[in-house]
Image 1 (cartoon, one colour):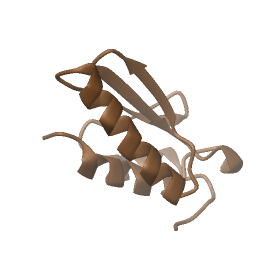
Image 2 (tube, rainbow, N blue to C red):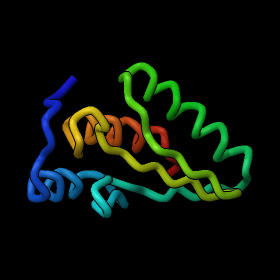
Image 3 (cartoon, rainbow, N blue to C red):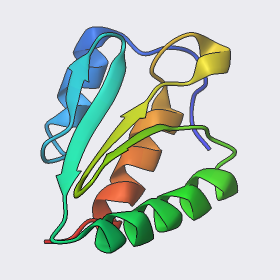
Image 4 (tube, rainbow, N blue to C red):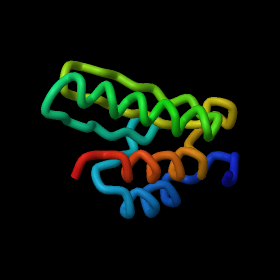
Length: 97
């Protein structure tokens, strides 16, 4: 499942180079996804929720009409861990091209 101790900002920044559009800000990694319709975004969130449940993870998800923002950090570790980066990579594969 990955290391559950917080990663350094340098480690996070290096890993985020492999994930298009993800940013480190305010102690979380975050990405905004935009959809053609509200229902498309809701279906995406449902798929993200299934991934998160399977990973025993708890992302913060903000839905604003056709815009969905996903924020990840491992609450129990008090920072960003491998678990967050792994889930971000899985979410990336769900996102529309």
